[in-house]
Image (cartoon, rainbow over all chains, first blue to last red; front, side):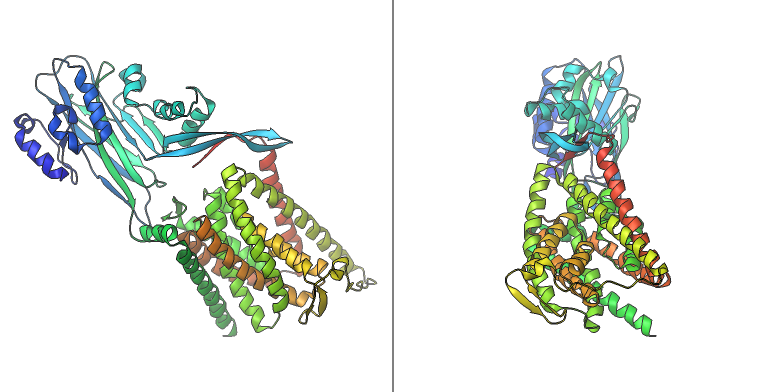
Length: 296
Length: 302
């Protein structure tokens, strides 16, 4: 369905055929939502919102993103050890580029989950969890790569609007729970997840050539949470977002991992009995094998 | 080579897990203990979520205690009646413990309670074992020493509901063994241990059972109680990780056999002092962790 819509749109748009488009192995290039309403169904809701936002401030020379991912489906198998995705694309223009530097920010975020943050305090000589706050949704993973330092290429107001930087992303969730901006609990989430390699920020990790082609590699760690990951690509000039584009990456357990996980959650009694059977068999086997070894 | 654990949702090196399993297997083979009290804190350290570490541990204990129980069944050193009374208590305790674990996780105090329980129990038992082993060593050198007669009636024996335990040659109240069972059941569910290190001294010193049947009977109780705990953890908390259990099991089985051979070569007294030192060492390490200021005061949980 999605591919057909894309194909129809690509055929209908002669302007697109002229632009340089790198071809992805699995995901073909898809035009950004801001180019027209025809593509609206192909993008995630957030992209629609972002595209509409970019569409309101018309600059004389419209620049939009065309992008693809090296994989839009990640399978967690028994020996899964993390993976990398290549995100690449091009800038589409209808007129020559304006002067001034062009910047690209690429952000990949994992599914959001509620977290409980606890703070330890010393009570009677030992450190005990005392205060706790619930942050109702924080991304389980967030990687952000850009062509330059975020503080320089992204204005504060645009960050507020699109929730791009890591503090913004978590702040948003924290504010919804009545926590203040610089709340120590909200910053603790960021600090701990950064230490664990779950929140990553890499300035100058996006390569941009001739103000047209860009690409970056995002590493996904081994401890991935299942769910739909969102890859957002922002095109900026002078701190302002010109265009935004979103793709979804489905991260799923497969094979034996899937089977065990489903069994444990859907038929826990059978799963428990199966674990027991394996344990008892292993115990019996060990006892028998080594008894025979001792006799001989 | 990494392995993604489907329930723990973390990726861990297979060789690290095999190494852990083998090391703990060697120790348990050498000293004749289950090894749960060593493995559970180690699993915490490599990043397995506490719930999954404790839940999966129960499954491992089933394997090791079942294999041990088979050997004792062949030697007929299991007091089934006593085992059943202990087991009845154990099942009650285990059901309470699994619920308690759930509640403590929600309160965010499960880590603290587990660590405090470890520090207290390991500290007391380690110290007692060390003192006893040292006294025994001293006695061996004193040639005039005659062992004191074992008292056949301690104060708990006179309680109501008396039962006859033929294999143990005892006619005592069923309440003390039932109570010991409850205690061990709670501990096994919260701490992820079989509870042998607590049950063995209780059986000898409180119940006055003959040493010959103590180990077999406790293994009988631990096998069935851990089996019950595993199923309960799987149903209530979904915290049994089959892949984790399987890899640790392979290492543990091999390690236990190596450990048994090493154990045969070392003098019993030396072995007991070593075990006591190890138990005390773990207790002290955990105690420091509770007292010293942690580098990160905050923690996050789903």
